[in-house]
Image (cartoon, rainbow, N blue to C red; front, side, top):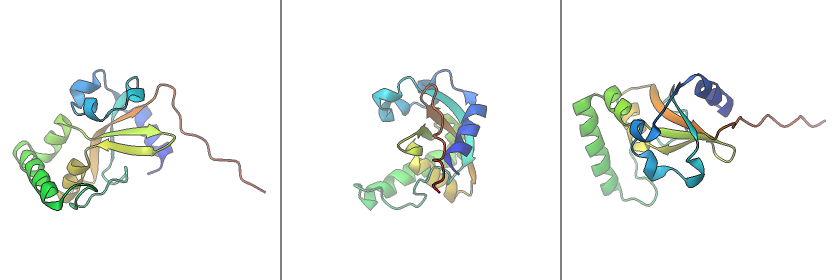
Amino acid sequence: MDVRDAYELFLAGDVVEDPFTTAPDLEYVMYDEEADYIWRMVVLPVDAVGADLSLDATPGCSQEDEDERFERIRQWMSEKGVVASLSECPPIARLTDKFGLDLIDGRHRLALAHQYGLTEVRLMLGAAPGWVPKSDPAPTI
């Protein structure tokens, strides 16, 4: 999925009035410059944000620690239901010029959603006020 497609879904998404209630992890992963972002709930393909959907360790983490984390999240998802757990604590992504469509929280949840067979997931997507995708450069002749 390219940034323009994600932006169209962003525009059509449901506005999140209180992003910190909707996605409690946001306060831990948000940069200062994102404090005034507009946040919306959108449905995207699980693989749209380019996250590693394997159960391999995140760089800088041991496989043993990651296995334990995946197991805790898997147990939580099994108890609540996969879709319900993702609604309670949605993955978080942003649209930026530098990173495009960028997952900032929820790789483990997305990887497990993928393992459970989900092809789409509801996530919270943010963009700076007035942000629009940059247009393609003019072709050179």
